[in-house]
Image (tube, rainbow, N blue to C red; front, side):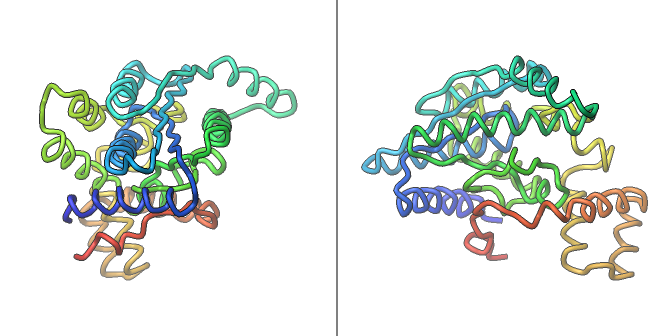
Length: 283
């Protein structure tokens, strides 16, 4: 894939959407992970390239107790490197209050607790977007979309520049940014992108130890899981294709990935606006 074209398309399409809808502010919750950091780099470029539009990029880190020190440090690097305005707002006290309220009738689960955290963050971000005349940037990628690793009314936001990329492609785009655009190894932007690229992925809410991948494909890479999903989406239950995947990655792994895909189908009935992959993918 031509990642220069990918990045240029994401920047121009984001700016175009803001301009056409009379929006001035991009609001982003920064987790420290690769998705939000790459999205931050896109937002920063929009502000830089279109000064006449007077766009503003506000980044906020919204940690709860489940965020690791590594994630918080990476989020701090990204905010300082890319944002027009930024700060940290710890939501632990609010989370504990809402969790206790919800548990008055039924006990919570790790998943429901993670959903509370995600939805609290979105309440904060949408309020911020409302009072600053902007929109909330979405950071979910295509792998998360097809596996359902996101929270309805929690992760899903208004506009998603990276939504057409598989997770391994987000990594490749990040690599392109710090090796071809922000090449000074001591610059804040290079350091922020590199930190996000190197960070150990988590699910962000401590729902499961080891994050999303550990739940369905332990020991496998994002590229391998993306291959399973992409093959299934193109060929369905084709016997020959399924046999090939089982031989390559193990029958149990393929089954776990596709089971997760099918069980999360109800979530995909709703989607934010995403840049169409056809605009930059010519292969």
